[in-house]
Image (tube, rainbow, N blue to C red; front, side):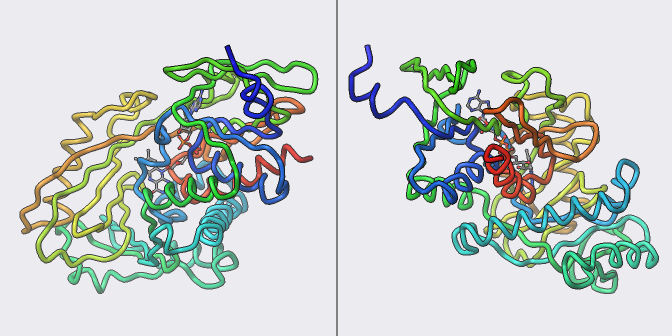
Length: 372
Ligand SMILES: Cc1cc2nc3c(=O)[nH]c(=O)nc-3n(C[C@H](O)[C@H](O)[C@H](O)COP(=O)(O)OP(=O)(O)OC[C@H]3O[C@@H](n4cnc5c(N)ncnc54)[C@H](O)[C@@H]3O)c2cc1C
């Protein structure tokens, strides 16, 4: 039986966010910015966020040339430029909200490893299209510097992206939750929204933890549950996609700086704390990785380990420390879902593989959508 105090002060909120990843946290912070005294809550099923936001590779990236080229099969150039702008604005929003130090932001530059020689016309085409966003040309051919990097002989070209960088994902999430606390957002972690129902002017939320089952009420609800959204909103068109990452043990004399991509963005690696973090290869078994269950795909694991010694650090003994996986959300194209489900409910989900970049802005947008 609930106490009078619980009933009168802890169960009813003006704005409730479901899902405590990047999007959910930014949605709560954005609502707070416009409503200094509103009662705001965030409900996250994990003790830590349990989807993609604590599992990603922390690239503050905007699309490598081969990835952008592939995207032109699904998008017009104008749509692609608009999406790139959202990624850039999202990273800027994260940096200005949390501060570079708190998120471990490093402006380390991005590089794409190419297995063919670089096409100067392709470079000019994308530079021309994206220059207005970055206020400068993002891409340059630095194949001449390849020997400094010491990659395997299959790498024939190297394209730099002047505006890419990286964050420390753990520090970023930690900074977000610290700010949520400071801003008076009540975070219920380890609590799953099981079902919801709109009743008059309120949404009733059935929330379960291992200890308790409670009904909370909210005037407005933002679903920021990404790959898991269909459990609650079955009409959404979302396909889950698992991503695999490995981290090596410390490597002596590791002298590499930057964020690297290859295979149209499906593979990515970067140095961190004298180790190499390497992830991706989902394209090798898309069907097998179409799952919302965490786990390690042996085929992808083998491919990543082979790339480590053949492509990234040939001639250097390297030991893998461990692997982890995270769950992303995909759809027919790379547009995220941002929509109202009803007068009181909206959803922001399906962030794909670049939600570190798009997520902060999408969180802000879903909070604004519920204002209108
Ligand atoms: C391996 C990997 C590498 C990546 N690398 C990069 C990168 O380098 N750069 C980049 O830009 N992007 C990257 N991404 C993508 C990026 O991490 C995601 O797009 C982004 O984190 C999505 O954020 P989100 O808040 O929408 O979703 P999530 O982080 O998945 O958050 C959704 C949350 O909702 C919670 N939830 C679900 N259902 C319920 C419920 N019923 N009740 C309560 N809570 C619920 C989940 O536990 C989860 O924490 C990567 C992703 C992966 C998996």
